[in-house]
Image 1 (tube, each protein chain N blue to C red):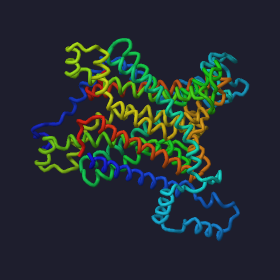
Image 2 (cartoon, each protein chain N blue to C red):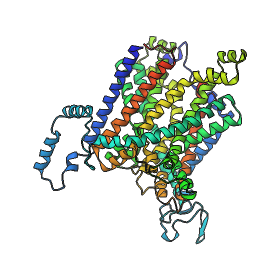
Image 3 (tube, each protein chain N blue to C red):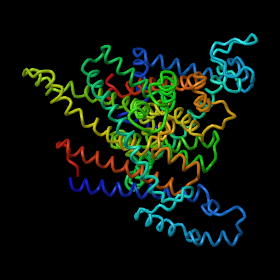
Image 4 (cartoon, rainbow over the protein chains, first blue to last red):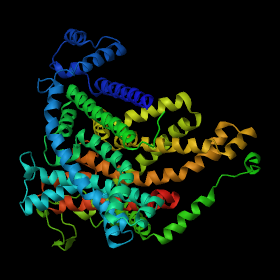
Length: 305
Length: 298
């Protein structure tokens, strides 16, 4: 157990180092920062002086180590466009992204888990077919298209909700539902198949045979055992959503991290791109790590070496 | 040839496809998926003959006509866009770019991912550790941001878009192939082939790859839909197909700006994407259920 945790931690650190290498590599291909910082008429001497000042005349490994050391101190550099530290620009967007991600996940889990259980219990009925159809269509609809249709119907025609921006609960409804539908489709499918796997087990037949009510059979015996893959999936989903829902945030003009990252890529604001990417990846790695550890704790049968 | 034919246990080859066809006959979803995807392929192929008008012909007087409108003897079935171009013709031609990008990206990522997976699973040890850590990094990296950043560097265009999508899609093939190969590697027929003096290269191409292919086909089918959606999403975000080529993603982007006055501009190209993706998902479901009966439980 301890060895497993230690190995997972080493793995997580390795992944983060790998991501920082990719993020660092982006600076050296996206465009020369010197060209971005200096005016067009800059002389060759000024360019060389600037390169020296930024350390760009050093060998690449030295530059990477310098970058890594700064990042470990939370220093991603100053945003080229907004003249503020890149990390604080990203951190400013965390609340908006967290609000959208958690609302979407609550909707997704709230719809998908009960529906998935119902579909598994009433297999091959209209409930099951309807649930499968919902998950199929939900997974096939491009998020931005669903978002546009939602804006068209509920924002433009019916005028029930605002078409974009952040504000109170009313602003949250459309983006959260749109983002939630896609997650719900996956969770629904998984819940259904996890429940189907469990339902045919002998101990459920025993539980029924000894006269337990159906609620207890499903709630206490089936769902608890089916919950492992579902929890894993939700953990990964949270890790992905917290990194910023790039497309949904763009469609609904939601000021989250995804939108910030897209705008930074367009503006070639490299420090902000690096900060956003590393932040999103760190969240994902942490979410995977925590999910794996939760798994060990939830299922004492599993022995990790 | 001699080595393969005298093996005591021959790996299942053609026979493994039989249940696939048998299951298709019983699964109406599979039929719907195949017919829809087949139709989209036909439409893309015959686009110049099927499209009622030139998809690029602008007619500013007849701009933003609603669906079914009739002007100067022409019926505009799906209406016209902000430059007066016939939407039905544009949706018809848009299928070409979606399928081109989708199939190319799937083929590239499948070839690369499967190769990595076979190397990783078959040779193990250092190869395995290194390649699997690379897939960890790729999985943790926000893929749409990576694609956007790479397109921003390389410049927008069809070829770059295919490359970027392939880069973000190979991990699934690599992971699944690796785990399948780990299972196959210790089987008796591999041992027997090795005992008879077959080289790694022969074992991989004769015995390992054919066993992995069905799983790869399942992933490929699901990922074709994903690639088409990603292509449209990247175009929508502004770094995908250049605007002079009619593409579903590009039409959606234009449509988003005219959402309150011309709903049809965003609705029809999006519906085309949805139908195509739906078809690939149906085919993927069918392949998965047919090739791996435990996974689907449908």
